[in-house]
Image (cartoon, rainbow, N blue to C red; front, side):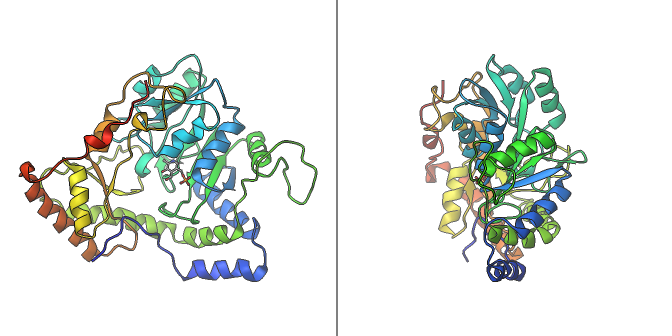
Length: 385
Ligand SMILES: Cc1ncc(COP(=O)(O)O)c(C=O)c1O
């Protein structure tokens, strides 16, 4: 039995919608993109939703539209996907890498405050693994220090903080519709905005310096950050069954917890209770995570390590990033974290197989002499200083 880490759930409706775009002979942004943007606005409760090619470019666009660039700093959690920080670095600004909370893996407001310097202009909360950041604390911090806010809600579709959807707290919110997200367009992303003037600036940015297509007059400089209607047509079909997918994601985590209830040494990520969590992955924390991943791969089970701490990324260094307080929790999470297979279409039988394999390993792990731990070696590249 081969159990993949993740594969998107795609049905007949996606095929049907896609064929419609081909029959219509309209492939760039059109009626399907408008429909998807309307669905996103309704779901997230924001005034404007603008599709862009992916989540990383959404972050890049948001930062550029807000005027972030060389000489500026942006607070970014040390524990997130690389794209959160690369989007900052590619504007010429520097990500300031901030530790996360052990309890919910999100940006630690205290560490963020201590990391603010004279050039810090923006904060990027990341709703990691589908759990909201402490937006009350981070919003207060941003307001108190006059910081702009770009929310990285790449993993946050369906996630709320209180009764508000994540991605709608900051100046601009960014989401990803990459193939492993709760809903996917293959590649894709969206900018969430409430302010009309800011939304217009985003439109100029993504639409080659114009508000409307069909004109060769370009009042501003801008990029082409459009998507295709083929992607949007898939996204609409995905969106129509989003609640079923979210329910299934929660069920998968419950099934893992049930089948691993008796397994020793597993720590389950806590829900911070600040809103509705949509588990982006089925995560556990264990000793010897690397060895467990290797063991599971011998059983044809694809487990994934957690994100590599940004301050140890080989591509981030003192020239393009800042660390004012050495992050510790991000290192601990990397060393202990493992994402178990969690495709919406995973079967209960497959989950049982994964759980019995983990239980087998935990018996073996009681004898560390039999295994070599490589996780320490994997954490060596030059830290940002
Ligand atoms: C937290 C986070 N930020 C940004 C991104 C970048 O999104 P994309 O892959 O669509 O560029 C991802 C993608 O996985 C992500 O998980």
